[in-house]
Image (tube, rainbow, N blue to C red; front, side, top):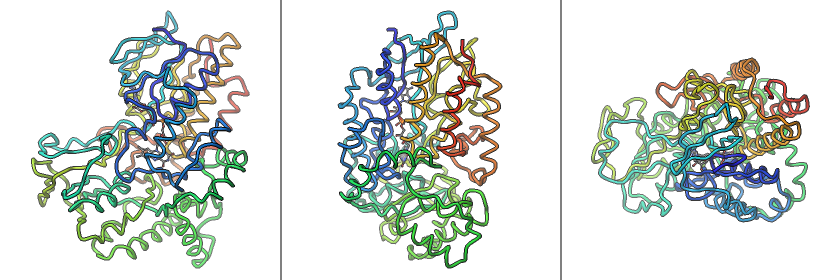
Amino acid sequence: MRYDAVVVGAGFAGMYMLHKLRGLGLSVRVFETGDGVGGTWYWNRYPGARCDVESMEYSYSFDEELQQEWEWTQRYPSQPEILRYANHVADRFDLRRDIQFETRVTGAGYDETANLWRVRTDRGEHEARYLITAVGCLSAARIPDFPGVGAFRGPSYHTGRWPHEGVDFAGQRVAVIGTGSSGIQAIPVIAAQAEHVTVFQRTANYSLPAWNRPMEPEYAQWVKANYPEIRTTMRTSVNGVMSTFNETSALEVTEEDRRREFETRWAKGGASFLGAYGDIAINPDANELTAEFVRAKIRETVTDPRVAELLAPKDHPIGTKRICIDTDYYATYNRPNVTLVDVRAAPIEEITASGVRTADAEYTADMIVYATGYDAMTGPLLGIDITGKGGLSLRRKWEAGPRTYLGLMTAGFPNMFTITGPGSPSVLSNMIVSIEQHVDWIAGCLERLRADGVATIDADPAAEDAWVEHVNEVAGRTLYMRANSWYLGANIPGKPRVFMPYVGGVGAYRSRCDQITADGYPGFVLS
Ligand code: FAD
């Protein structure tokens, strides 16, 4: 079939892109591997899965009636609630009729002569003028290739591919591998049900309390009444959220003031803790003061000092790996049915038929939960065999790391757009804000091309080089480069170490994109 646009993925990015393109009168087909909408929130059904951005902020802003009618029930929305919201949006805008579910896009090649994308799926081929990837930054779930992964006799699950029918942990000895965001959310809930949980930790991560609670109706009403200003604040902020970011240096204030500020933000809960001072992300001393405050909280909470020390992160600055937001994570280690295993000291050597064997012991388990994360940002894109002009393969082009102009296009792949692609704020922000900004920009661009009779748009290689350099340069001014994070591809053996998201901030990035539109698309080649 032939369409004006093919969109890959039906998470929040693909859903809104479809709605926008329909509004332009374009014919659109969305392909989605899963059998429903929601992306991340469709796949990640693990116990405790929850958004780290407050629900009044983690929601679409493009439709006034939608944002007024939807009622969130909790301060931080749980996965089931976000999935209900995604389905509500799909119903409300009648999106499903243009989405083909249970269909994976396997390849896409640009046909220069016809100026068309030829899109291959596991169910047939299609053609489109525009190819828009909405594949997500965290959708390529990854299990490390431990020897013996297939040998385990019991069931094993990846948090990002959780069975729809759920998992009953009662009476089970559960091995949980991984203590990133997903592990930190899942472990307390699993521990409350299972007979025993053995947690395998390679890297201790900083986690801040969510203090999640039911939504206060007065608060929801206040936000709804003030959405126009609130959404503007979010769009022009650093991370796409409403919370206040203090510009002062942590080193300029007295110890007493600093403690008060940290305590206040800790008591409020959530990631706004990292906005306590303006130099936490850039100054090692300011960062260390912040990190030490969190370590002290861990030591206060965890009764066994040996376990507390293992849980207190010391090998990377706070905020340089994705910050975690939890409910009772550290206190869970005070339970008699939870054991922490340090696999930095004694690495996992093998998954056996009956459990997990590390360099110094074997741990028996009835089930294994892999909370081992994703091949982030580039994984989902490079999972598709994409070829551009002259048969240039995206995999080949990005061999040494992703190269994009603004995270929106990559030179040599005309009429292909990447929503929240590498080189844009994406995973460093409230992603719905970044998604809406990209979708609006792309739709505005296509409208303009049509009005001006322009058939193709591509990134100019020189502009792309300059943007890649800028992305690296800004990241280089921060402490982000000091952590072995998935932002840098460090969780995947052999993946190039390139800092992928843009740390320049959501507001500054938006202004730049808007200016480029206003100036007639400098840095893009239109023909
Ligand atoms: P996704 O939701 O990932 O959707 C992409 C879709 O594309 C998927 O459904 C996938 O199946 C499909 N797809 C991929 N490749 C193909 C293919 N080749 N063919 C067909 N379909 C394909 N963000 C925040 O802002 N705050 C948070 O607190 C937060 N918490 C998160 C917690 C977890 C556990 C995870 C995994 C992510 C979290 N995120 C969070 C990021 C989250 O991914 C985004 O907020 C948002 O949901 C991304 O939407 P998306 O549409 O861009 O991508």
